[in-house]
Length: 127
Image (spheres, rainbow, N blue to C red):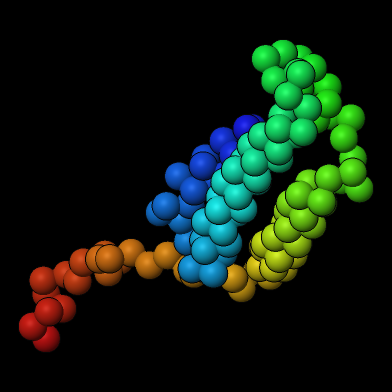
């Protein structure tokens, strides 16, 4: 999950001066929000599991094993966050793939200065 967050931050930095449309750039920011939500939701679910099993509160390895072995069907909070993660990933991912597949989605880059033309010979300037 941490690697996914790093990849989204790198994508945000790389797209800063790119020729992508604004809608596609906005989706990258939405992906960052989704990942931040997943981080916070995972922390809340782990705190909820720690409160339900206070005997393993000080043992991180046991807490990790409990978190890994708990299914979403056993924890309504985990089920809710799993559904929210799945929905937000589909809401962000599907339009992003459609926008990237469409070749007309990019904005052409124009030079701020006009292209230099061939010089006109002096004798033809005043004829």
